[in-house]
Image 1 (tube, rainbow, N blue to C red):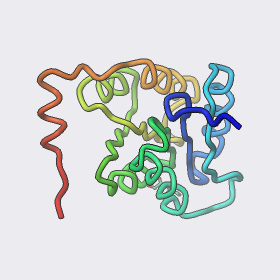
Image 2: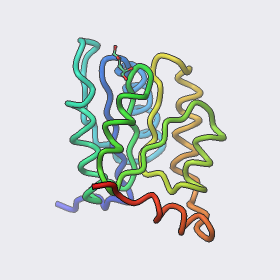
Image 3: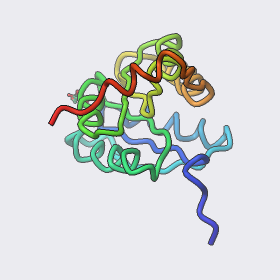
Image 4: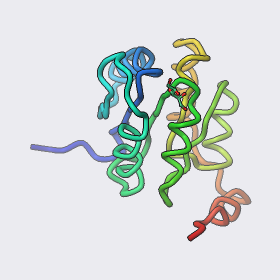
Length: 151
Ligand code: RB5
């Protein structure tokens, strides 16, 4: 079986606060032509966001996934969990410009969304910009490399 390359794959994960949005975005991403790896959760039942964010963040960290979208109610818990991984740069975004800047300036590899605070359509606009925008490199490369790790 030919496995899709990490270039074609996008991961998506959420807790109950992002479940409905995750289902909406997953359908949009498939329609858009991407292969989506769904890390759950798969119902509106209350869960703990780290249980769903650690596995997807680990796969981005290990380059099994190039890009991922994570959603919780506020986006904060999901982003904080993902950013525990040294190769992860998860950006919590509330509008399209921030999603674009997260790629252009920060080479973000995970988009974190506040599932309870933005519309599904705005969320999709942010996801689309995030996957279509390239890192600008140049002066931003040195800055991103200085983010580093604190042991
Ligand atoms: C769940 O109620 C909520 O706390 C969670 O989705 C998230 O917002 C945490 O940061």
